[in-house]
Picture (cartoon, rainbow, N blue to C red):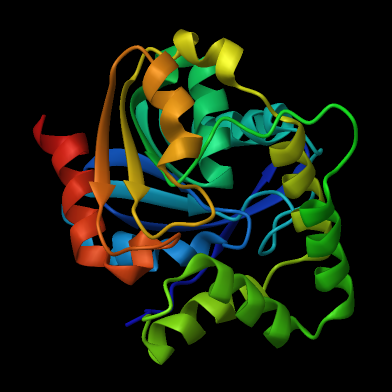
Length: 264
C-alpha cells in the first residue's frame, strides 16, 4: 500500500529539485521513468530503509522540480549536482526506463561516483536523427488534450499486464496522471534522441539489468545492447511482470535489488 512521504527541495544551478528521502546505510539514488516521479519508489523507500540511505528524485519537469534541458546529458548533469549535495562518496544508482538512461549517462560521465548500477526495464535510447516518431507525437498530443486521469489510465494500460489488479492499475495511473507536459516533452525527446551504445563500454560499475517477460515497453530485445556492451553486467528476468515491477511485485523487486547492492 502506498505511503505518503513528504518532499524536500534543494536549489541547484538550474533551479529547484524536489525529492523523497528515507533510510540509513548504503547510499542509493532512485531515478524514475517517463510516466513516474519520486513517488514511484515509495515501496522501496519504505521496505529498504533499514539498510539503505535512499533518495528518489523528481526529474527536472516532474513533481516540483524545475525544467533543465532536453537531453540525457542535461538530466545527468542535474543528477550529478544533486548527488554532490547528498553524499561525499560513491553511490549506487537504480534507474527505471527513462531513469535508466540517466543512470547510465551518470556512470559514463562520472564513473568514479557510481559504485553499482541497477537498470530496470530500460534501453540505450532510440537514436532518432530525422525527427520524432509518431508514437512520440501521439504521446504529447494525449498529454495536452486528455484529462489528466484519462492520460494516466492510458499510460497504466500500456505499462501493465492485462491481469493486473484494479488497485495496482489505479495506483500506477494516479502517478502517471501527475505528469507535467514540460517535463514529459523534454524527457521524451531525450529518450528519442539518445544513443548510448557507443559509450556503454565506459561504464565501470558492476551492473544489474532487470527485464520483465510481460513488459511491452522495454522488453529484453531492447535491453540486449546493454548486456552486450556494458563490461561487468548481470541479467535477471522477472516473470509475470510488466513495466512497473517496483510496484507490481515490490517484494521480489526489492529482493533482487538489495541482493545485488548489498550481498554480492
